[in-house]
Image 1 (cartoon, rainbow, N blue to C red):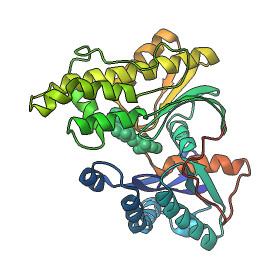
Image 2 (image 1 turned 180 degrees about the horizontal axis):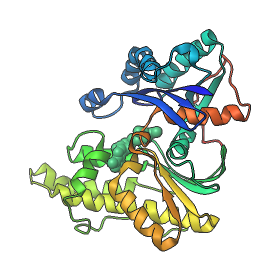
Image 3 (image 1 turned 90 degrees about the vertical axis):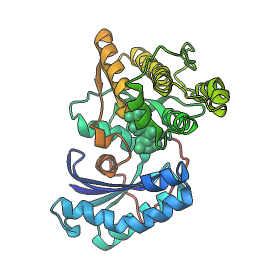
Length: 335
Ligand code: KG4
Ligand code: ZN
């Protein structure tokens, strides 16, 4: 089945054509980086207006770059759950219109389920069950993936998401937005043992996360030097901060894997692009005797191919929406 995916939950306007949760024919992403840099982050109203400007163009690009025409599309999948309300509404309105005009099924997708499917798209042999760490700017979650569309939420962040911590530390250090890629790059030249920053909830038995204390510890440690005009050792701060985040993410994921006795873990979401995170996961997976899977880089951050893939899986279960499909900005991840 040829599924057109639409993703507008935050700051990427994306559309994709995917066959059967397996073959990505196109995955067009228009970022709002210019706006993000100008305002230092996502401004919901401005992001929604940009989606409205771009959505028609982006869908057209996804279809034509795949060598198809709109009437080839057999279903429309759209992110309808979790995200910024105005942004979600733009994608859902476009999806409803297309579904009505083309007379094809409409499929509402939870954004987090999309991230889980990013890994299944990149790694068709990813075994079930497995543990998925989904970690981005809006969420940090450990999910037991029993099978397709069958999930158990094991832990999530109590405050900031891991990507949010990257973004906030980068903002504090005046490194620009988004912070993840720039800290990732700076850290390659830094000493990760230069500072022993806190590893929140690392020793606690829980599978929940907390990153706001780490962020505050770093801000408190350097704000006076920064205000006094001192030149900070940015590479060392970046490397030490990143190491603290990676330590916590990896340790909790392995704890979950051991508790559930799975043979594989997957890592997804924007932060899964992080080089050090991938390195540490790969190193430790050999010791643990567990396989680790990551999406290809274009599928780590928000994109519509993952939404199309998840939508098809929902279609297979008979879960088809109608034109009353609504948006749910804060709905918990369904398990
Ligand atoms: O999945 P995504 O595009 O959007 C959300 O669903 O939030 O993730 C964006 C987040 C941002 O916080 C960004 O700083 C982070 O992913 N990110 C990274 C890297 N690339 C993106 N964090 C660490 N290292 C990276 N290389
Ligand atoms: Zn996301």
